[in-house]
Length: 187
Ligand SMILES: [Zn+2]
Image (cartoon, rainbow, N blue to C red; front, side, top):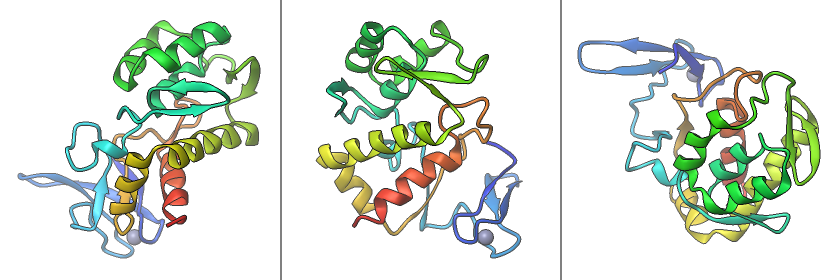
């Protein structure tokens, strides 16, 4: 768990606190705690939140390409070869795509990713648009994902496993939460 994350209530910094029983986040500004029952920390390892994880096998199609999960799509962005990219999206589930990543191109060196023959800067509006489009496809096409998100619409979503550094990850904690909260607004 990282030391701080953005408080889902007031957007100030919440701080990791550890006692002998557990670790949790607390916001000094508004007193929000990650252990509150209206907070959901999204993790593939948790039974209650796994179906909202990018690793969960919710299928969707983007630009004609079947993706077995959001993680399959995101990891495939490392690959410039269209055929191989498509094979990763369509054949490797989230956890497998995640495990493949170290054998794929390290996008961090140049800061570019690839989609469908296009080279896109990681840190750009075009990248945000592409990720937004993928989450829209998932939301519109996959009733299971959509209904589970609906069932959690009154929860504060956090992702304590998430990375904050845009130069290190293809989806920061903030980007991830932004997408889920944006979709929740549609209900
Ligand atoms: Zn707060």
